[in-house]
Image (cartoon, rainbow, N blue to C red; front, side, top):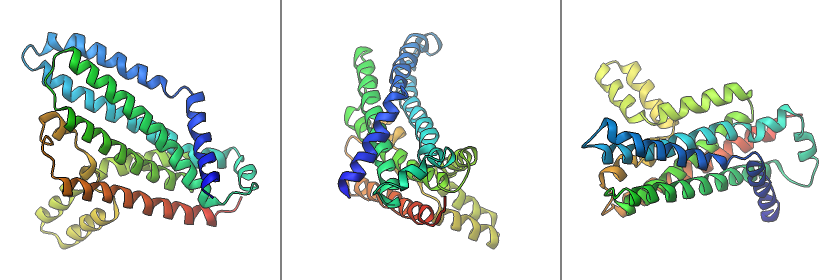
Length: 258
């Protein structure tokens, strides 16, 4: 079983390489170079802070685009092209297909984030920009966990909806997932029982992605002395939520007929 999952994950990774997805790394380096050159012209005294913000935000945005557009097509593309018939005819279970696809894209994301983080740190070092290296590395790890969770969301939608709808739904979950705590507060301020129950329900159902978003902490250096237990708890939350979503995707995929 482990071997079959590894082979599936390896195929996803190799396909991503063939699609030249790693060229995105060059694009990231290019936009950092452009920002490095033009930001001082617009912010003579705050360009360092702006570059710190921009580098982390660009890494997040690029990773999200790859996750959503590739993730929603991992299984959906196989279904739409009917190549899924060839895949399920092989001695591999549907659960192995889901897990293999997920791990393959997770490996791609790990490589992307690792190299983009290295490039980001090189620019910071070259520009003599004061930066909390440990905080940035922690934020990058949590960005990977967040994108891995979004990958599982994309797979869930991809196994039973069309590509465009799966993309839109995954993006919606990402947006709402980053403000679930704010939505709960809004429900409480409304003083409407129905609204409070609705917002609480959304908070319980949707992933709280803010727990995995440490960009601001990295920029401001708030993680120089991290609360280890809180970080472990949030990382565990992301991993468990991803596992739960993969289980849901496996159940749905197992019930589909082709």
